Image 1 (cartoon, one colour):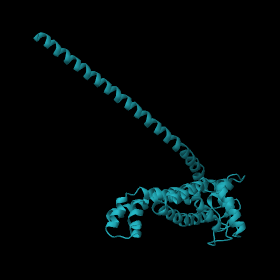
Image 2 (cartoon, helix red, strand yellow):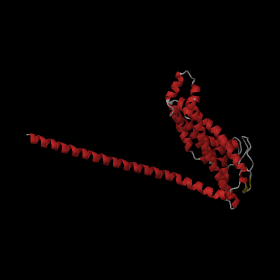
Image 3 (cartoon, helix red, strand yellow):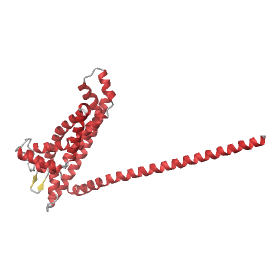
Image 4 (cartoon, helix red, strand yellow):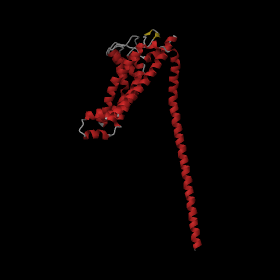
Length: 310
């Protein structure tokens, strides 16, 4: 009997060891499968990132290689004359458009985002969000044609700064309102509840607490809107026209130049100077977009540091 119990205990120990080894092998196999899946997912992520970055690198590299060898700083200080000269009038017109879109689209988009995130009722909010998404999906050339019929022809504004800014601003407002709404919804509700508990007014809480916390998302939306507006050509051709003179700050009957017109028009001309101007304009547009991104990052970092200190 003692020998039988001893053999039985040894058998149980052997069975336990075998089970332990089996569980360990299964764990190793499971870890190996998990690591393999992780490697596959990371590889797909890197491949997708490469697909996104490669066209941008090729485009920017091509523009730089074509523009830099023949670039002259006189392009920045000389206006266009015919198919030659510089891009002073186009640069000034583009800056005016950027500032105008920042003021009009930025202001309307932020107010719309605040309304949708905090004050709009469910049915009204859903209707406005659907309308905004439809507006964002309309092709830019359709915006240009509608702007031409409504502003240039019907209201007799002519090709003008006002017609161009109105059309571009309406085109990009949905991007600002959407990003503003999403950013505001991501701010913890405890922030506003704490402000209310301290007796702060609703407007003060919105300005000093909620908007500051949502500033990175708001700035991102504004930068996307300005970048889209800066790179558009068709709506401006229909509404702002073109002029080789410096822009006049008049709402109506004030055509102006802009860099995208030089890129679109001069590239197909037989003159080498015109083609070079198109590459110079493309290079300046790329530099402008990069500067906008840098400025936005600086604004966000400074505001966040200020909010943390206060």
